[in-house]
Image (tube, rainbow, N blue to C red; front, side, top):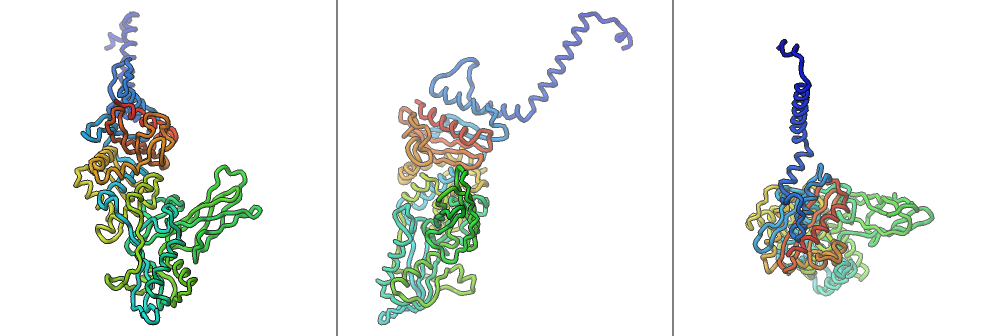
Amino acid sequence: MKHILNKKLSVKHVILIIVLLLAAVFIVFKLVSSNSPSAKAKRIARKHSPKFQKGVLDTSAMGMLMGFVDTMNNAGQLYGGSWSFYLAEVGSGKAICKVDIDHGLSPASVMKTVTTGTALSLLGPGYRFSTLLQYDGKLDAATKILNGNIYIKGEGDPSLGSATFGSSVGDVMKEWVAAIKKAGIDSIAGCIIGDAESFESNPISPYWTWEDMQCDYGTGPGGLNIRENLFDMLITLSGKQTRIKTDPVIPGLKLYNEIDYNPSIARPYAYVEGSPFEFERTALGEVSGAYTGRSAIPDPALFCAQTLRIALKEQGIKIRDSATTVRLMHLNGAKPNSKKGERTTISTINSPTLSELVYHTNQVSQNFYAESILREIAWKINGFGNPSDAVNIIYHFWKIHGVDLRGMCMVDGCGLARMNAITTHQLVDMLRVYAQDSAVFPTFYRSLPVAGETGTIRKLADGTEADGNLHAKSGTMARIKSYAGYVKTRSGKMLCFAMIGNNTLWSEVELQDKFARLFVLMARLP
């Protein structure tokens, strides 16, 4: 060794040693960089990307689609986030494009496709919710005195008294007052009782965030609903002070006003903090002028009973006791008469068909209706509208239809819970099942918004091949964007697809634009 070190090296030897050292440094660098998180992400993206001949651009419709998918797979904006895309033929199930299709992601409102489609399959497009007006005790025909109580028994109808379907609270009350008069009752020696016991009493999913619960889109259903369980806040100004008037008036509601006047605010807002059945609430927000907000009625069943009692008294019908609910009676130790056969039904109000309710739900992404439909599945099949029971029924339905549910987590019907997870593989399999059911598919397909024309995607792909062609349910939450539905190729072949992005570095608008680009590229396929 000493001999080698003491030996005088030639220039040639020095250059050789330097080259060997540089090669060793390069090999170490490649080993380290190939195991970095970003390199791993790129390898995963390449694994699911279409293969292209280097330097050759495929300008066919399929090539353009695959090329765009490839650019998304390799985008730096995927760092820390995920996206999944599955496109398949409806008839054969043949996959056309697959990107990470078995990765469970949060779908936001695309979860409504699972709820509404399964409900149509289990209950039928012509199914209707019902609300019954009943009495117990004995009716004295001679004196017209009812020695008993009037019950309003709800069975989960989300549309009762809803302007969406051409009704109002006043219309409902007129019908009930007329029914009570027609039954020969002009005096009630008892209570007006709201019965919401067909559904679980807590209308709010435990998996929703407090922030979402305070907004009108976070209103939950009960067994007895009225006016979509919402009241309007009519906000006006008196100088620089804000004033609030509710429409309709909610008996017992104490609403503290902490809404500020801010003339420079670009987008006014107002919301109410408060839990279900809580009548002391606080209104917060900022407005620059007159403004109307909406918030949840604290106890819809009680409001329903109170409103009917007022309407009856205005018509001269005497009522001995107050308005209450079965829930409150239980809390106070009373035992309401609710056994089968112990009440007489004098009026039934039926909802629009499930087909119509599903159309409204999917077109505007209505969470309240989706949650009502979810609970109705359990009410119809098990006799009690428990959301977790409904989810189990849905799981069972899809297992029977051969869908692999591994990794799927469904905790609500509308997709508002971030705990929800589903794969694009599962969504596409479900869409194919709907398409093969002639009794369900026309209704379900029609309920989905149409690109460039209707619902939540009416502004997307306008004037392109997807305009009027692509039908899809959208999903949007902070850091979540998703779509699932159907598109026809140029030859008329029906395809189904699902695409979901979670926690990417693209903004909501940027990811929406990329998905809209996929709409167009899918519609261009031959």
